[in-house]
Length: 233
Length: 233
DNA sequence: GTGCATCTCGATACACCGTACTGGTCGATA
DNA sequence: TATCGACCAGTACGGTGTATCGAGATGCAC
Image 1 (cartoon, helix red, strand yellow):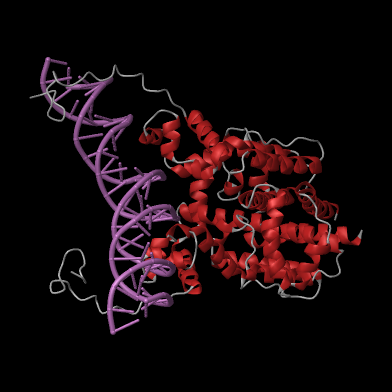
Image 2 (cartoon, rainbow over the protein chains, first blue to last red):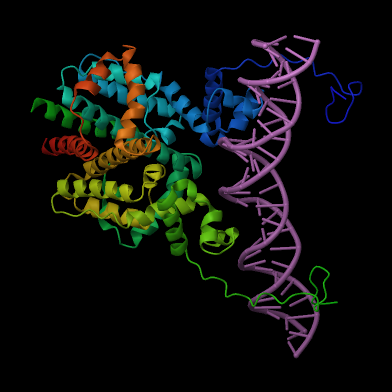
């Protein structure tokens, strides 16, 4: 009566398909796959099932390497941080380069905008980036270092989120800037036509429109100038 | 043969349960309910089913008022914007008050941090806030108004997200600051003990730790000071 | 007034999600 | 070799957003 599975005797049961070497797996492989999926189709395309399928593995297998989906997202973010290494000598150079590198990463991995600032970044790569940053801020009074770093990071997170959000909205309505203007334009046009937002309407219509690059750098300059003033004081 | 439903004759069919006046509904009611749920148990507690249940209505009924869940979230954010009205005379006052009001709103509705910056805010309340803001920036050159507003908003979004994220992390590990220190402390302690992040370790150990309020205001001052310098130039 | 076409609306159903549970398998130990 | 224990992963559960489509209501032509 032993050796029975679901009522079939050994004789009728097919051999286990020669035990295909259980696909070797690693956290790094899982994370890389998840990032690939997210890059291709956004964060919504990252589900444990899809990642598992892409790795030719059953979903529950992943729980040997991560405890929850949230952990996977944390790992993805930290993996991207590996590519964000500020460079430069002067504190201002370093902070600016960190900001630009973060923005570039978000351009390459738009899903990063959804995750940035969502959870504290304590992974090794993020900490390493922070180390580089802090190390380059030796000139600054020790009590001011964290607030300065926090301010720059906060600005970058918000600016990148806004930029990516706008980019997506453009893409969603039509595809290029022409379509965007045709689709959002009319809405704002109608809204402004109500006369309820005169100041806003004036600025939107009359002011020069900076592109995303210039807008980002201008805001960043505000922050850095403010920091510089504080340091000099 | 008329008046038949699923093969039952009139006699066997129970009367329709005296047609309870279909619960009156409105977008505002739906949004208010969703906000109540989110306030109580976070954004995850907001599902169309739960909102519908709370309103004693079937889920699909909601689609008469909104086209998708995303629209509901947009409406929630805009509803909160109704409470964010900057005040003051000088441009600096106004920007600061907008920043503080946004932060307060996020303290009252933590889920706001998850949504801020995630999509362009074009709802009437958000636009009204923008109008007030822009109107108060008359002193500033028209071409600089949008970049200035964008910079402040970007900083606020990032700072609030970081703050709420940290607050949640604290709450998740134990409950109060004591627990937090016991739980994260050891992790950072061990990590720093590796000697891989000397500068970071020094700053974290030696620097004065600002509370959330001071950190937020300090960063905000950087931004505003930078803007002031730009205007004066 | 009556029969029919039309429209509206919401219940049902689908495809998918994260992950708790637990049965089965396998390795180590006595 | 027999038994026990640990561990792995398949099954299954309770949930999600929303497409579909049939039933009921409504308005209209005669």
